[in-house]
Length: 170
Image 1 (cartoon, rainbow, N blue to C red):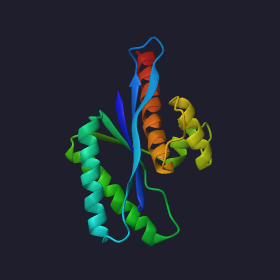
Image 2 (cartoon, rainbow, N blue to C red):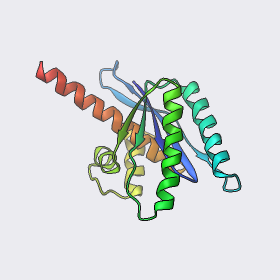
Image 3 (cartoon, rainbow, N blue to C red):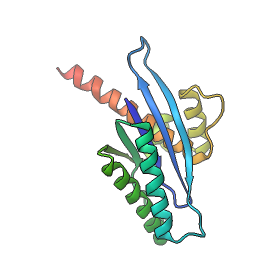
Image 4 (cartoon, rainbow, N blue to C red):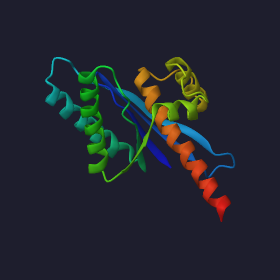
């Protein structure tokens, strides 16, 4: 299974592609790509969203994931920031939908619990565990890329758990 994780941000949107190789005797997680899409402030919001859509569409076509995983909307004190983040998130969902990909959404607490074991983990703890789980030589940069990889790992672990549970029921 290949999962394309997206960590939506108004300045930088992180992406990460993780593959779960279950054919091995011991299934392994493998990072295929990670990075950040910078959205220049000098552009209008509409231009930044168009740039994000084009970049995500290109990345989705290049990596051919089976599913896209994104972080659910979280509540923000600043309504204007939350609205802008929602617009970025909408573009990410649109890019996935136009690529005919299923989108899985996870709450920030769920992602952190799955990857770190603690829902209130700090960003550095998430980065550390992503680096360890994917056997990387160094922490993914920018930090948004590590978050996107964490979202992809969360989907893979959730899918593994649901598969095991459905098999146990039968």
